[in-house]
Length: 115
Image 1 (cartoon, rainbow, N blue to C red):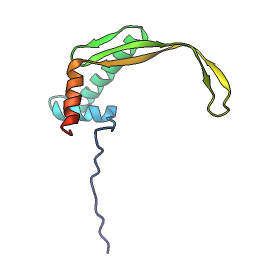
Image 2: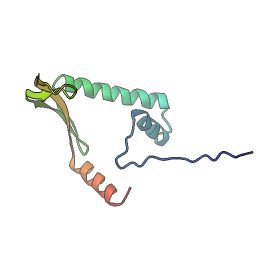
Image 3: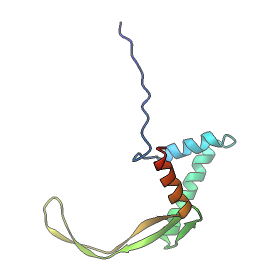
Image 4: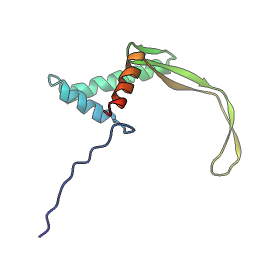
């Protein structure tokens, strides 16, 4: 009879991706006085308010973390990758994030230490 071995595979954080669910789990595990549902509601509410503020053309600034704003992309000529035909692309606004000084320093220190 063969035995099955289970291995825990962890994703490396550098170049990895933290999902909204993982963020909620992480916060809930550190803030034990809050239920996972409360943390989930808080995270979803914050993201919804931030999304709406950007949709309304507002800039969001979180001191020490960074700022979110909109950048306008000029109309341009693009190509349909399937056919190669030229297509005119309209101008559009895209969200932009500029990290704050403390966040930049923390990220660079963490990466240099191999965290």
